[in-house]
Structures are given as C-alpha cells and as structure tokens.
Length: 307
Ligand SMILES: NC(=O)c1ccc[n+]([C@@H]2O[C@H](COP(=O)([O-])OP(=O)(O)OC[C@H]3O[C@@H](n4cnc5c(N)ncnc54)[C@H](OP(=O)(O)O)[C@@H]3O)[C@@H](O)[C@H]2O)c1
Image (cartoon, rainbow, N blue to C red; front, side, top):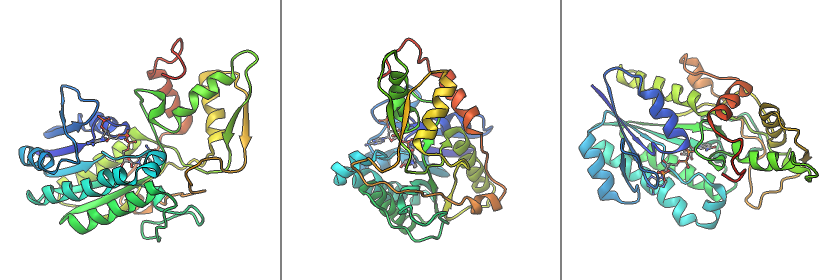
C-alpha cells in the first residue's frame, strides 16, 4: 500500500488531486481541510505544529503533498505574517514531520517567485518576487528544500478548474463582471490586457502530480524544483472574451492596457516545463475545452453572479 497525505485537499487544486488519486489501485489517500471540512477529510490547521505532527504520525505516509496555502496576493500584501505562517512556517513543519517517517514531500509553489520581465523562466532561473505572496512562496520553497530530507517543489502558474464558487480562480472570478456587462444597457467591463498568463487546468496538474508520485512509488524519485504550465498565453481580456463565448453571452468588454492592480504583479512569468516534459510527464487540455467543462459543471444560470 502506497500512502499519500494531501494537505489542503479541499482547495481548488487539492480537490482535483484527490479526484485523480482516487483512481489509483493500492494507494491510500488521507487528506485535510481547514474551513471546508467534509466527512472524508481530517480538519487540520497547518499553523498548529502539534496537530500537523499528530496527523502525519497517524497516517505514516510514503509521500506528502502540500496544497494548503494563502494564495491570494492582496491578502498576503495586507498580512505578510499570515502569508508567512501558511506559506513558509507550515511548509517547514510539515516537511519536518514527514522526515520522521522518511516520507517524500511535494510542495506547490508559484510563477510569482519571478519578476515577469524576462520569460520564459527555467526551474533554475533567478527568482525576484514583486509582491508579498511571491516572496512568501519563495521562502516556502527554500524552507522545503532546506528541511525535507527527500522533497520536491512544483511551480505552477494561474490555475483554473472545477470550482465551488466563482472567486476560487482568477479565471472564473471574471464571470460576474462579464455577465453583468451583458445585461441590457450595461456599461462595458474593463479587463486587464497587460499581464500575460498561462492558465493551467487543475485536472491536468493533478495528472502531473499523480505521475510524479508514481515515479516516487517505483523508486524514481524526482527532487529539487520542477515546473508545469499550460501552453496558451492569454491576458485577462482574452480570457474574458473566451469565457463570454463559452457562456454564450453578448458581453461588452474593454481591454485595459496598463496594470491596474494595487498589489504589484509580474508581466509575464511563463514557466518552462522542460524538466518534466523530458521525463515524459504531463497533460494539457486546450483552454476552450477545459473551460467549457468547468462551466458545464457549475450551475451558474439563474444564480446571482456574485455566487
Ligand atoms: N490558484 C492559483 O491560481 C495558483 C497559481 C499558482 C500556484 N498556486 C499554488 O497552488 C497551491 C494550491 O492553491 P489553490 O488555488 O488550490 O488554493 P485554495 O483553493 O485557496 O486552497 C487552499 C487550501 O489551503 C487550505 N488552508 C487554508 N488555510 C489553512 C490552514 N490554516 N490550515 C490548513 N489548511 C488551510 C484550504 O482549506 P479550506 O478551503 O478547507 O479552508 C484549502 O484546502 C498553493 O500552494 C498556491 O500557492 C495557485
């Protein structure tokens, strides 16, 4: 029996990963949630080191995946101590607990560790985060590499996938404004056309993580830093146009060609996925196909757009 502990199984990525791993024969998956517990998940606050140790000691995993994080840049900017507790200290505590059982730890990081000025970025390019979120995730990477006796960091860009509410992903969070702009006599919605993103489908990332875990299970452990990214560059205005098409909405959208966010964000952090591709890993679902799956599974018509 190969045992995997998924910390943060209730999140956008965590849920897709749990779904993917459920199909593995002879694997036991133990997962945690924080504010959204379900009967299948253990409630765990990763800021509580004793609770983290108790959970890992109980599961005695072969591998630990850390998908719990504070991933909202504006929240990290306002409260760097909170960002540090989740994105740095918790990673260090979980990796220490995993070490006690010889478990291998995979921690998830972000393209925001880069400044976005010189893409594409390789796994060994020099990080230079522009905001508190990217800084905390970079420190979390270093905590993982320094603490885990056996471990790996997987960097990812903008994620989207099956959602529980629109705001779970920066892709679907555009929907309420798109829908509002399609109302009779509505004003046009301004959409950022400056920052270039590579939206990446969480079920595809879940396949990548499952493949990385399979390598570990058969003794071909991947170490250090790896990256995975979708391969379709888009700004938010272009994402919004494609969302409106998929939703069959006659939206009124205006591209905004200068950055508008209060929190500084990088221009283009395209992550090279070459290390994983060279190992024959990965799957990429085309954006237009994937986003239709996401929208079809979410009962949006007739709901308030702020749901
Ligand atoms: N979303 C993106 O676009 C994106 C892009 C690049 C990288 N990433 C990285 O990908 C990883 C997964 O992100 P995500 O989008 O899936 O995030 P998410 O949807 O916000 O999920 C965060 C997870 O962390 C859990 N959590 C929050 N506070 C916790 C606490 N105090 N103790 C224990 N668990 C806690 C949440 O549990 P509850 O929901 O039950 O409270 C949830 O399971 C993160 O490392 C993130 O930095 C995300």
